[in-house]
Length: 148
Image (cartoon, rainbow, N blue to C red):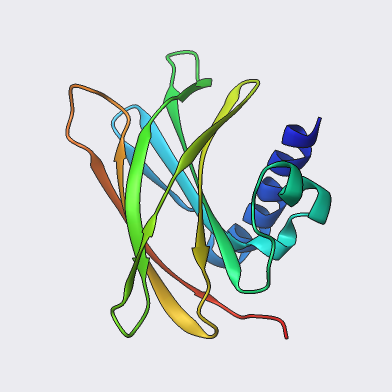
């Protein structure tokens, strides 16, 4: 139940993020790599605590999911390996430590990070969704504002 609440909160947060930036995904062959970054304060305190996520105005959460498109038009979740880092304008890098969450027909790869107020943050990710293929680079820039 708590896991579903967490996923719902993340998806709601992702909607806010993607509403401003349009849908964020990369299509590679039959795979769609969806990604978003949100402020962890979008999570309720109960959900954050139950899932060991630090909920704070200066903490963010990166969410990556990979889906494979099927011939019938449906998609299926793909377990992936995600690595990467985030950096600000100063160039200081923070490594991202992803963990995988399975919820029914969804698989999410989540990593917390430190927000930098009113600074463009560069996310550089490497997503391996196929053991027989090289990892796919996924890079994006997003600006966050910290509520004080």
